[in-house]
Image (tube, rainbow, N blue to C red; front, side):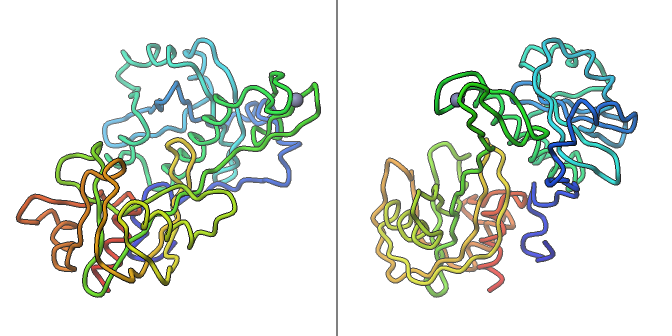
Length: 306
Ligand SMILES: [Zn+2]
């Protein structure tokens, strides 16, 4: 992605060569024999980082895994500059083995993204690892017959030995939209947001629905505003746990608001100047937008820049 409005987004730069056509041969255990191999280690919901004075990385030498008790699934994500990159999932208890060592840091992925402590490229690899391992952690049984399934295809499939079903990792599409009418845009806040933060409306795309219709439905349901034209801007992997955010600019057909208070604590129209002040954290009432790593920021920035 080279668009100046969106190239600061988190999780969008992933330099892995995925070798997706060769996954039957690229078994994680075979890749792990390569002395150049590295692994991401996710314990529960957190990532293990190796820290030095001026840098940090989640790409660990495989010997570090010996510290983690109760190791479970391992997947092969691809290669990075020719070196195999694996991802390993361990139970949350394994974090204790790293907590007391100065060379390690245990952080959740959101904090890693906000703090910017690994490179943008490594953040993209982490998003892949987090979403894929979460799927393994929560999809251990066949949805057709209930039998425990086993990892296959380098970790990009699970197979059922009883009924033969093959199960693939899921990605859940979310439409996120900057709804604009002339010189104003519609932003809302959920009660879980930090005080003062307003963001774009968003919602899961349902089966049988186009992206455009999901934008129209969610905007009408949450704010009572009818939407006409919808334009795609950019997308962002969002591994919490396994979504892809599909960012759109939507044109409102009216500006009367009827908020769904179960979804939104507040929502209102903001002028372009006001939205700019919110992006720059200079709004007189202390209102602000999500940080630049989130696609909502890129959508609002796109509106502000016209
Ligand atoms: Zn089955």
